[in-house]
Image (cartoon, rainbow, N blue to C red; front, side, top):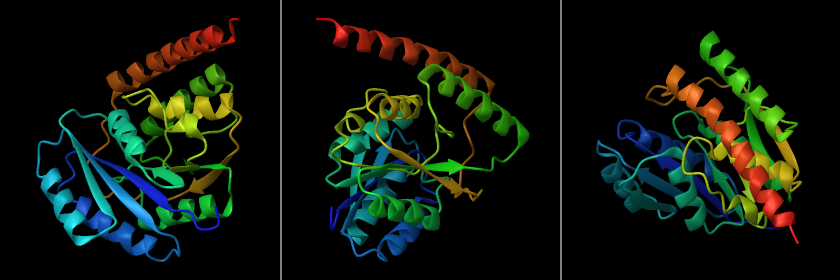
Length: 237
């Protein structure tokens, strides 16, 4: 890919208060590249003016496109974006937590490292509870899926389109990142982790609580069983 077209997938849920600032910063950063790009704003189940703001951004920037879904959900939004992406390199990220310099850094790594998945590895969490919860989840996923890498949910994630199994993710919930990593391991897609130290948050608050954390721990185990069953069926004559 001498001159790859880049797709940036940004799920948007109740982010009317800051998504304009995020996109302005991203577009300014991405303009520094010599490569063309598209920014896909995936508005999903918002109860504020997120869709209106996204549509205004699409009018302002030719590279911005909007997809809207009445149903919300991180995994659902990511999947809608992956299916619509036209790029040779495809990136998805959490716009509330990803700064423009970090996005640009990870995308540049992807451009420089063809045939490689590039994933952020966040080194700092806001408090000890989040650090502990993240550690337990990462340890569980590493053990279940035999993963050699950390920060399962870390974004941005960037990969070449020819890694087609990553364009066809099936999870429509928060386990989509675990599925992403498990597929990379199963398909032997090379992965490079980029350390991210920034703690900037554009807006909103983390929705991870004890109940949702426990749901993800149980969900990771269920995903492992499902993927194992799927592999067994594939191997049968």
